[in-house]
Image (cartoon, rainbow, N blue to C red; front, side, top):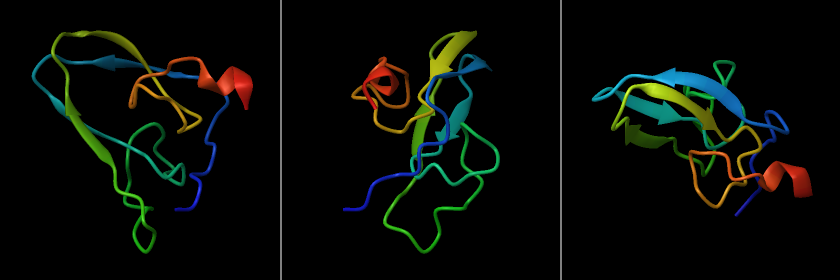
Length: 79
């Protein structure tokens, strides 16, 4: 499996809305980071779809290497 593109060595703070579905970019190629814009087509990557359980600011992974995808776990500090 190939490695994703590191979109940002840090998290993307985003406002999530409870009950709304999101597609987090797993390949790192999206121009709409941290969300998918379809740029993964033709690669082995697929976006991670998730539903927000509460309305809040969340910190989504920008390096694409988090062990807690789509959320940042600080892995970017070791890359």
